[in-house]
Image 1 (cartoon, rainbow, N blue to C red):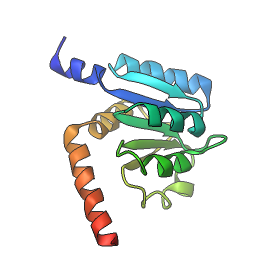
Image 2 (image 1 turned 180 degrees about the vertical axis):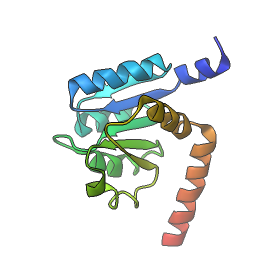
Image 3 (image 1 turned 120 degrees about the horizontal axis):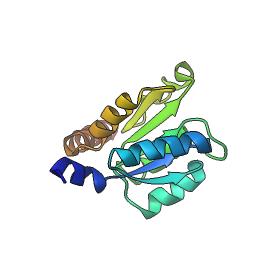
Image 4 (image 1 turned 30 degrees about the vertical axis):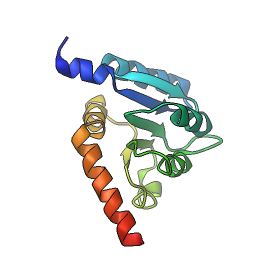
Length: 144
């Protein structure tokens, strides 16, 4: 087993999607890429899981019942620096409200699996997390 495969296996992804078929399709793909995957059917369940377990990244649908991806992201960034990838079919409707959320990236559905793979690799790299942490600290200092 290569070092890269081993590193991916220890990286856990929280996948939040209310559409069961799409959730299972994405979960299978992520597992095939060597990631551990925990699934949630909506933002409420995801919030509970994110508080109990550390994840390398969170991939969430934007529009879901009970708690949508924006509210989930707003909650998670209060207690975690985990990068979040929000998926939506209505990009224009949401892209402007998300620029104030640190560690949150928006991707339009449908997307190619290769793009998802690249985004997750970047989101879960140590260098990106360190850089994001520095940016967040600078933003907090400026706001004070």
